[in-house]
Image (tube, rainbow, N blue to C red; front, top):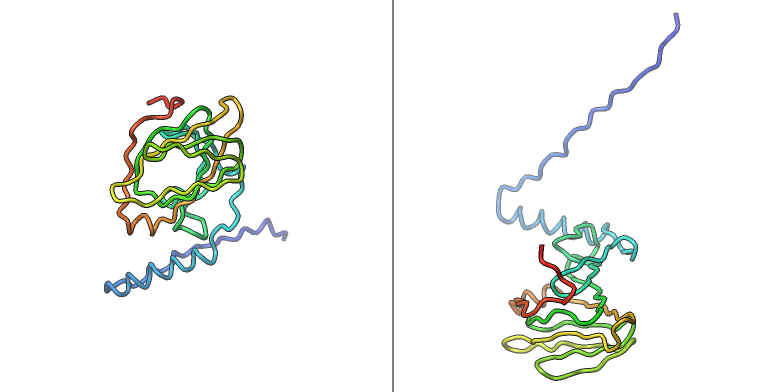
Length: 175
């Protein structure tokens, strides 16, 4: 008597839901999940794993965005790159941004004052009551002009920062 192929059946059991009977239980549960993500989340974000998208502000590539990329070790940061072809949109927010110029040269109009920058420079948007109106320009349209910005979200939250778009990027086409 020959035996035919043996198939194994695996039964996956659902993980038991945490007992969240009290508000304290909920807090401890979510804090534990946060710590677990800090310890096990993605540490290296590769350039090739993110795509550019045309936003109202500019041609942007988001590396860290806590509302979109949930698998990263740090969920408290927004990090994005702008490729400024001619100029960005104009907008206003509370400030507190750090911008590192990666390539090219340009200038930013911050509350009506022109600030020139080039590759290797750091641009700081100050924190001001009422916010900071600003727009970024490529000083040599047709040549690459890129920078990357870093925002610490808890700081923005403490400032109750809002953003208002005052003018769209010339490359933005509404859907």
